[in-house]
Length: 146
Image 1: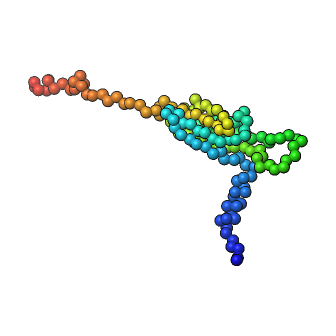
Image 2: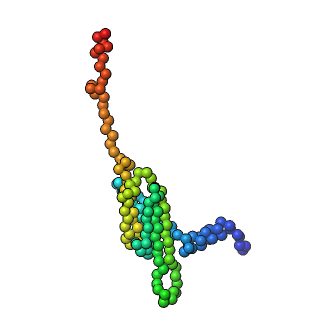
Image 3: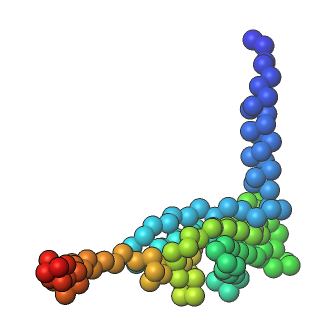
C-alpha cells in the first residue's frame, strides 16, 4: 500500500492548526433574526467577563470584541490546558434601516444578545390614497357658454 500526497488535505490540516491558534481572534458563532421591529443577534462567547465586551458602531459598521482571560493563578500546575486565553471579534455591516442610537446588549450564560431596533423610516407604513374630488376638478362652464 502506497501513501499518496494530497495537497488539499495538507492545506486543510495547516489551515485548521492556524485557525485554532490562540494568537488571533476567534470567530464567535451567532444567530441573527428579526422579531417584529427589532433585529436580535445572539453570539456565543463562552467564559468571558461581560465587562470585557466592547461593542461599538461606526457609521453602519457594528464591531463586537470580547476577551477571555487566563484562568488559574501563578501556583497552578496544569495537567492539560485546552481552554487558553482568547479574544473574539465579529464585525457586521448594518443596513440603512436600523436605529443605531438605540442598540442595547445583555449577556447571560455565555450568550451575548444584541438588540438592534428598526428605524422609524424603515418600518412598514400605510400610504393614504387621495381621490380627485369635485373640488379639484376643472370647471368647464365658461368654455361651454362661449
